[in-house]
Length: 241
Ligand SMILES: O=P(O)(O)O[C@H]1O[C@H](CO)[C@@H](O)[C@H]1O
Ligand SMILES: O=c1cc[nH]c(=O)[nH]1
Image (cartoon, rainbow, N blue to C red):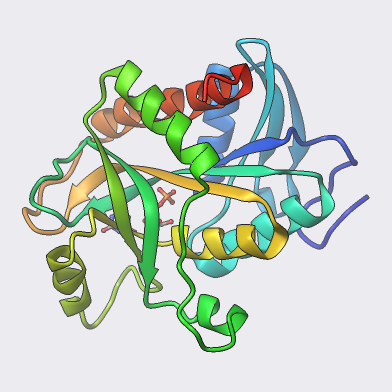
């Protein structure tokens, strides 16, 4: 079985897929955290893997950057490969004064300058929100982990290099914690397919203060976020939530 962008067999993906933007981070996650790893996609080098995390079957695949890219992969995973839950594990720019670099932002909701949700919602304003069944265990896992975590809105931007960054100041003034490029689209695709989605991001740089993390810091804070995402899946499976 194959879709235009994923060449895998039915059952190759677990019910829950972690999605970083970068396919090499997907490879890193599989090699660092999984046992019994099976590569399940390599079309366009968008690497996907299924393995075991603490004995629980789980998958990871890159999403690419931006709403169009993650929308393609999320739609194919939900509609053709039996995936029920996608947890984006990405990076974001800090927008809010309470947010420091290396903090974790759990995106309860996502505002956007993308038109995709209006397209799918006949011009009305769709509320792009995380699935509570993924959100609550993620918050619990983050607290257990001891991470500095913020739960709230993010701004999903179409342009990384925008000629007009005033929207980011406005988003900050309305309490958005970070800017990234996928969450609002992912939440829309999950709603289309009756499935679950959540975006978790580590703050890699700060839009207001101009601070940036070093490559080493990015790696270790990325690991914190991955453990939070993976442990949230175990908490959910155990039915503690
Ligand atoms: O680190 P990832 O998951 O790619 O996320 C962020 O980084 C990319 C921009 O550099 C965008 O995809 C943005 O959302
Ligand atoms: O999309 C992103 C991701 C990280 N930092 C940013 O400024 N934007």
